Length: 84
Image 1 (cartoon, rainbow, N blue to C red):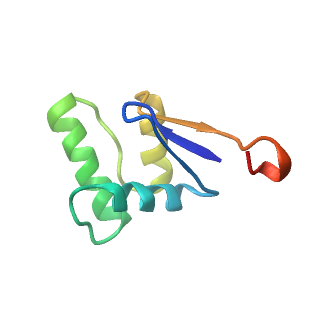
Image 2 (image 1 turned 90 degrees about the horizontal axis):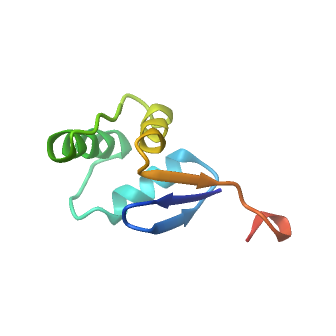
């Protein structure tokens, strides 16, 4: 699957929401203990600065809300063995 952060136009290919959120966490300027910690901080920033509500209780709802608010697009892999 190809995960694309629309406002930043950055993409990451992975097979799970967990790995994508881990990638987001590592790309962030702040240091986070784990995905849960990152999701809560990210949701707080979006709520405070952009008035966007994102659930952070689990990775599934976090990803759903990123998509619902047009922050994230997920595309299935295409081409040879799903590599392209």
